[in-house]
Length: 220
Image (cartoon, rainbow, N blue to C red; front, top):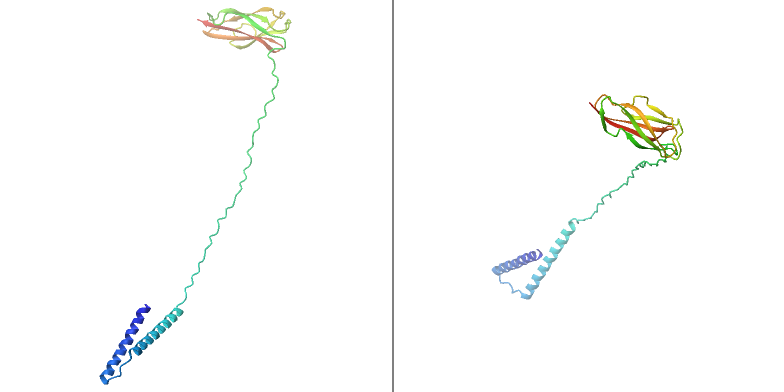
């Protein structure tokens, strides 16, 4: 941009000088200009033009407001993490305390026991409805003690009541250990056909020593 302006100024100066020379030539013959002097004049004009242009540029640059750029860093607030402690109530733990094992009552008094050796009628025997029969059990004293008379009872426990007498019978005879005895109860078959069972027990002082069962089938 600066060089173009210099070239224009030079052309203007040269043109002015040529026009002046022409005018002088038309009026009167002018003395011949020294080429060296002419070159010096041109150089001086160019130098003035360059100085003027530089002054103009400096003035313009000074007049323009300076652009101030300030980089401003915006700090983002840090995320604040608040730790929330949730108090969880302790879970109640159920403590299982093992039950203290209690001594179980013996089914028979100490030293007293019995075993059924045989049963009549045989299990599942068929007989007519309303038929009379005797339930007969042969029992052995398998305990370590003798039975005393009047201390043992033959007692009805469960099942169909086929006995024709009472539910409890006294055993009036004594029985030594390892000895056997026969017990008989009068019974009657039910009036309806079917299978029936009745259960008795030999009891000593409220404790069962052994059970005695009769099972039949009543037929029409």
